[in-house]
Length: 132
Ligand SMILES: [Zn+2]
Ligand SMILES: [Zn+2]
Image (cartoon, rainbow, N blue to C red; front, side, top):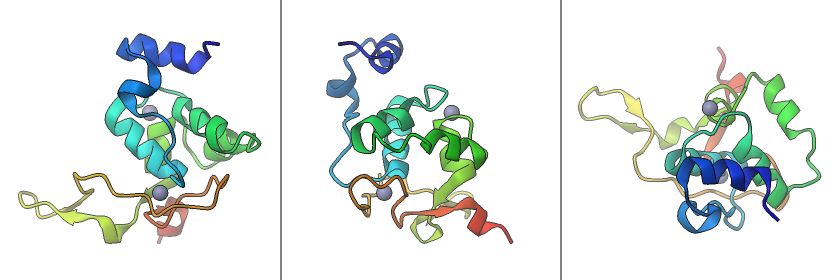
């Protein structure tokens, strides 16, 4: 049964969903790491396409998830990793050119969360906790 999601991804990539993109949620993988991985390999598709994909696979009963993320200021998947959660500062690396701290180019392994949790793992910090 084709879902709206596989239609969207198919239009963008012309490829079946899971084989090419590895879009299956990995065991224990948290929402933030999943979004980070999918935006890196398949880009933000607008709206909460990947968030909803994650929710269907991991936490189908977390029906308020999108509303919660919107309330925190996000309007699409990539916004979540900018306005809601940011990569933990301890994981940033120093850029040799700019001398600034940047996210690592290698993917960071998920530190894992409880099954069915929609909270991020310790790789991420809530943006509201970063505010001075
Ligand atoms: Zn986006
Ligand atoms: Zn994680």
